[in-house]
Length: 166
Ligand SMILES: [Mg+2]
Image (cartoon, rainbow, N blue to C red):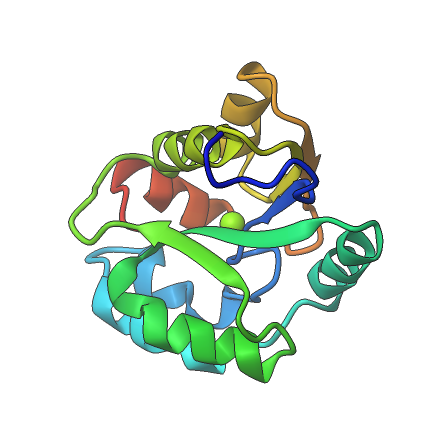
């Protein structure tokens, strides 16, 4: 593909919520009754990092892969998200996000992003914790690593599937 050097490293696509960021402290905003997405996103800066996820990133980098963070979070959270990544040791990493107002399920959003990234670049692996996202990408033939180190994410995945909000 034009503009891509032939020796460009393979891409390792890494999800954020439930893989690098522990969102359990803010799931209460979307778990029951009226979902408060603004409060859910406003609490992003307080997410603790997930050591397992950062260890995976370190390993993927050691293998020579280029990390790209692909998240269902909307673009309006970009500043908080990039500051969080920088604070946790991933400055200047490429971050691809959901467009504001895009209400499609996360699996559709991510399938589209992965397809675009795959044009001209090899995808070494996609790391995600959402079973629906993993199933969709595996069905598309992508190599998937299922992150299973943050439990209690089911309410988030249900919300992603039905509301397409993150
Ligand atoms: Mg996730």
